[in-house]
Structures are given as C-alpha cells and as structure tokens.
Image 1 (tube, one colour):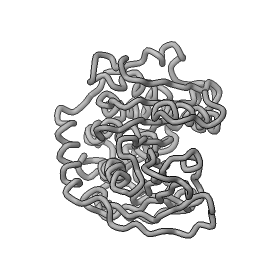
Image 2: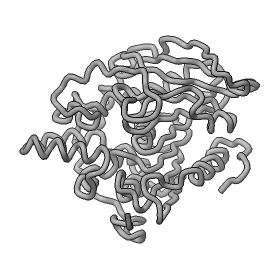
Image 3: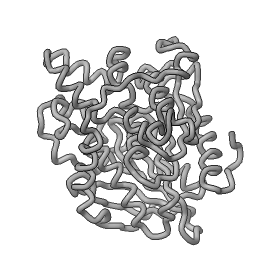
Length: 339
C-alpha cells in the first residue's frame, strides 16, 4: 500500500481543530473520581512460569466501577530496591495472553505491568481473563462500537478508566518507584497510553506508537480497516446515528488527551499505516502538551516516522529506540544499541 495520507511536510505541521465537548474535563474527572473510591489492588499471586531470571505475579486490580481487571506483573528476579515501572497496554482484540510473552521491559530492568483488555482477547494472541459486565448498551459486536451512541455507555470510557487505574495499581505494588512510571502501547495500546498521559498526574513518560483513537473523524474518512471499519459498518446500517456516534467519540479523542499531557513522550508511526492513519499520530504529537504552555513546544517529545511501513511501524527498530530514550528520561544506563 503506497503512502495515502498527507505528505510528510504537511504531517509535521498538522494541527487540526478539535470538536472538543465543553464538559470533556468534567466527564473524565467524574468518571475517574468514581473509580478512585475503590482501593486499587484486589489480589497479587505469584505465578510459576519456568523463567529463572524473571518473577511474575497474577494481579487483579479494580478498574472502572470497581470491576476486577487482570494483569501480569513481572520484575527481574535479582532486582533489589524500588524499580521504575512500565505499564503496558495491548492492542485491539488482544488480551494479556501468557506471562512469558512480553519480556522486553523486564529484561531491560524495569518492573512491568501488562494490563488485560476488558471484554476483548478473542481475536488473536493467547486470550484474556477480564469480562466487561457493562457491555449491554446498543452497539455492534466489536468493542469499538459497544455503547457507541452514548458517552457514558461507551466501551472506551471503561477501558481508558481501567488504564488509568492500572497506574494506581502498579504504584501500590511493593518494589516500585511510583515517581518513575511510564505508559507504553502500540495501536489501541498506544491510544490508551496517550489517554493515561493526559489523565494521570506525575507520569514520568509516555511511549506511543501508531495510536488508535487519534484524529478519529479523519480516520473514518480515510480507512475501512480495523476498528474504524467496524464503526463505519455500524453507521452504514444505523443510518442517521452519526451525530450521536461522533459526540461519543469526541470524549475519547486522543488528540484531546495529548493536549493535556505533560510527561516526556516518544511517538512512532508508519506513513503507510491504513489501520491508524499517520495524520492522527501527528495530530496528537503536534498538539501534545499544549495546554501547559502555548503549542506544547516546551514538553520533551520526539517522533519517529517509517516511510515504507504500515501499521507494523518500526517494529524492533522502534523498540530499540524506545529502550534508549526511556533509559535517558528515567536516568538509567541505556541498553546497548541506543538511538
């Protein structure tokens, strides 16, 4: 697929206007305040994985409405003292899988919390273990359209709240330096990491690659792939519901979260990405941190674009860059091969 979005020079300057609802901040403040009434941790149980250099626990924490959300928590077996932590969010349709699947961050010396996706986990990977008991509002079978017609009913209100509460959970775990927490994710996970950056005070870093839920209205005009295609398919059947759907989507728009973020940020995108078009990633990047001072140019941030890649982005090359960048942000010795 050739590049289909804006030319690189236009992407670098792309700052679209936002149809941001006037009560955006109140909506999220009220949602998170209700969730915070519950103590974050429910249970922490050690897991035997067969790995000798990593220790892992099966964690359950309270997310949206106090619902139990599952996660894997891992740390280097020989680590002493409080460690900085990476909270990682996984992609659309995926669950937390098996505890030995994602070892990059723990092998780099971080504590690592991998959050399950409520009501997902059945499309690929090795499954999930978190139900979504509130998925009863009108909408299609896919998570992207569950409760689409009302902001309070929407699946992503619940999933974003879970993502915020995952940070509270990791800060409650022993052996974690709560002042050095990074939110990390690709695709849907990138959209969640970006939302966390806009909602969680004191976050140390955000690493966001090919984020879903950024530039949503433009993405719906550009692509029928992936989650955006599910939304378009739903609206093709439920004609005349566009206004309600667009209103709901405006409360989970990643560019709005990016505007409110303050943590240093590392972005990545493939310029041939038809799943999460690069204009959405650049819109979030260019407006990242702007509520804290003008155009957001005072916030530490960097972008890595891959001209010949699609939704896979830079893959291992991007991870190599992330490792070096995060080590610098958190004041740690970088792993080999920094960028």
